[in-house]
Amino acid sequence: MRHVWIILGCLTWLLMASPAKAATPHSEFVGYPGLAKYAGQIDVYDDKGLVVELVVNCGRGRFGILTYSKSEQLYCGPDQRCLSSLDQAIGRLCR
Image (cartoon, rainbow, N blue to C red; front, side, top):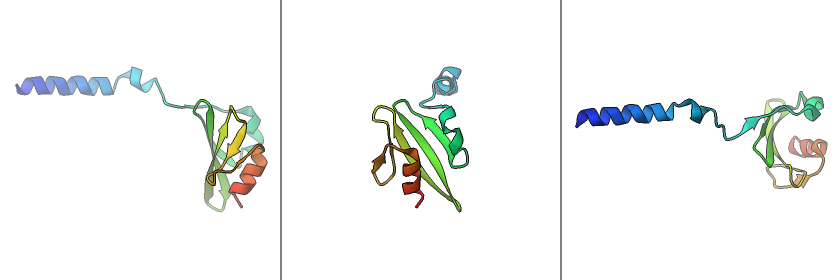
């Protein structure tokens, strides 16, 4: 009976480590040329489909997260206020 558990354990490990699982990410990192002018402020942007997450460097060791809704074309901060301008959203986030 012990050998059955060993075989099942090996099969489980092989399935968990399969390349097919590694090749299907939940989100994809995409570089947007339009954000080039924000290169010093936006450290990471992560495209999750209809929403893009932006990690903003506010300076002095402070960071914040904005989300951009592609369907509504709005930048939203953690205070749940949304703005159509990225400059205004960063200003509000980093004040």
